[in-house]
Length: 198
Image 1 (cartoon, one colour):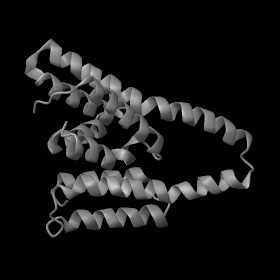
Image 2 (cartoon, one colour):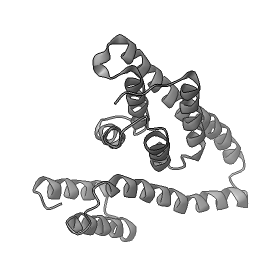
Image 3 (spheres, rainbow, N blue to C red):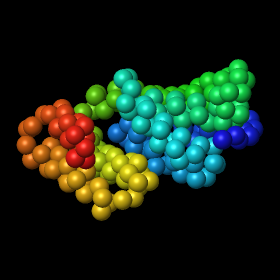
Image 4 (cartoon, one colour):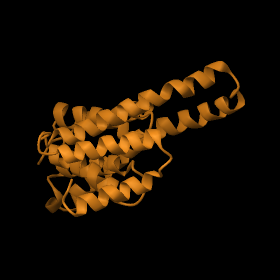
């Protein structure tokens, strides 16, 4: 995939990720649906496989889960440079993409988090602070569900994937109703996937 990006496009990439940074309650992964809308559907800077591969690779790799943003920036830059085989110029644009995307997603939220946390810690007994913390939980859950839906919608075979949906529902109920550690469910899911049941 080859694209042409102007200076305004690079600034647009930075500002879009900066805006998403302030909306990423629960982590950057919760803003993946809007990243898809912007990068794949709107600007056509990434293909669907590049988008989902960026998320899958970053989630599988050790380290912070925000690395998928770096991979998206890398792929945008590579596409602007003509692909990996295009040489050092493409690699330079890929690093520029990483810089723009990661600075955009990290800087505003880091400044806001530092400032708000200091203020909230000083005022933790205020009713408004307690209400804000309580009210954010359902929003984070809804954003994570939207991200999961986006990542699974590409397959779009719910009749064939019913064991996976059943496993998801069972794990959700177990997390909600028991004190069973989440790692046991992740391990069980891995075993069921390894033997081909889901």
